[in-house]
Length: 133
Image (spheres, one colour):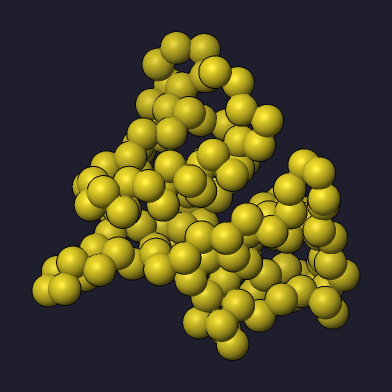
């Protein structure tokens, strides 16, 4: 099945897997989704990931992170911002601060996909893809 919004599908698969208390979620791969997975890992939102290049598209296996005591997921919320029907672009001065800096926004810029903090550091704006907190 071909989805019209692969980023929303990526976020929804992670959200659904966490609600069902799954340890691992498998997602069809793309370069954008791979970069978003790396950003989630670098910021401590997921435990581990692996890229499998089986078949024409390949898959991403993500090991989800939970609190060892309370079993609460590390990702409390995933929110899609820019969608195919309504793109959301921001200049570097207008980049959002998610939960006063406790969360992050993933931004697609001319210098690649990065967090809003990194975009501010490199002084570039772009398309705000999603919020993670």
